[in-house]
Length: 150
Ligand code: DQA
Image (cartoon, rainbow, N blue to C red; front, side, top):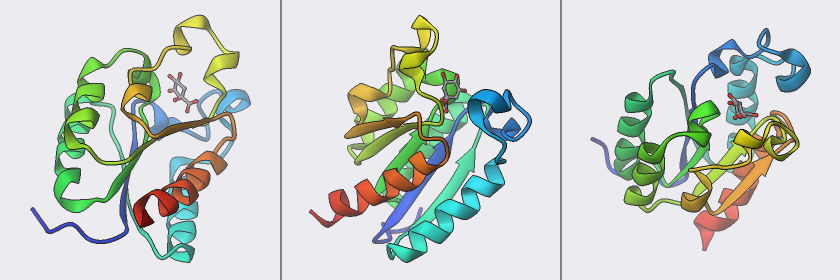
């Protein structure tokens, strides 16, 4: 494990987000996850931050990454996909590491099915950004610059 690097942000993407670009583009847009990663890295560089960008379909792997963030990140941006609405384990992990967290969703989860209105990630987050597509990730980086500076 490495020492905490100033300005390092861990961006975590949950299940099915690897399919962005072809997955329900009318809801999630046509950009791929690699497009979003590139945008995040470019924006982070402008803010003097660096980004570790990850995706997994496995809940346990995401829990492990959250734990590792204690040693290699100063903040977490997370789009937990469907685990948002189901995972007590992710909430507990985020609460345990005591890092600033921003929850992001491409779609406006409150405009969609009722089961998407509840998030286990929100109680562990500084704030939530949803409905702005990939721009939400960049907005989260902007928000965290302020949070990290304080
Ligand atoms: C999502 C919204 C979730 O409800 C859904 O399960 C996803 C993507 C979003 O980015 O809009 O997989 O997190």
